[in-house]
Amino acid sequence: MRRMLTTYLAVLLFLSLGFFGLGALASVGAAELRDPMQPPPLALRKMRQALAAQQPQVAKPKADQPETKTLQLTSILISPSRRIAIIDNQMLAVGDRIRGARLVKLTRESARLVRQGKVIELNLGNHSSAIRKKVAESNK
Image (tube, rainbow, N blue to C red; front, top):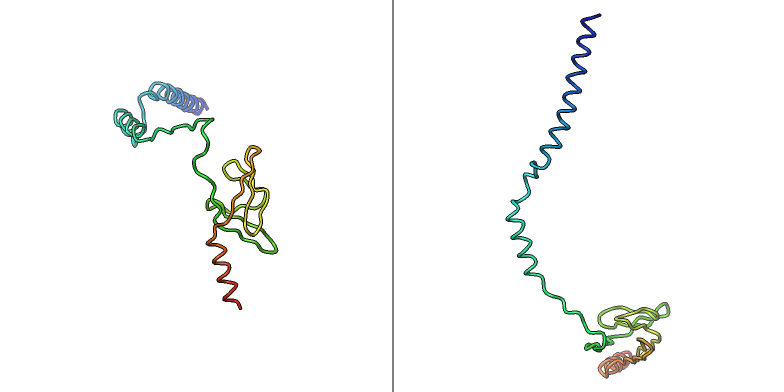
């Protein structure tokens, strides 16, 4: 019985020293240990500098400067189930927004948008009516 108690105490002492020793090793060695796959600090610094030099500087538009690019109506798609305008290569239904303007009205020939209280009327070019005429003539 005495031998078993001595063995039990020895194992308990060994385990407790092991846990405390690992804790001390982790606290002391954590600053020294680093990820072996991570590049050296000098290489990381050079990489960050190179990336910062490659990034273009974004010029912020001035608030009082008007938009230079106008909206372009490409086509109008009308069916019994939906009405769609293609403006600047985006499909818009009535109520949708593009560059701060909301589409409020859509006809076969034009689209009306409102931006900050100003009405923008976009019309299809003459080429679309010529195409429409060719299609109508070919159906006869």
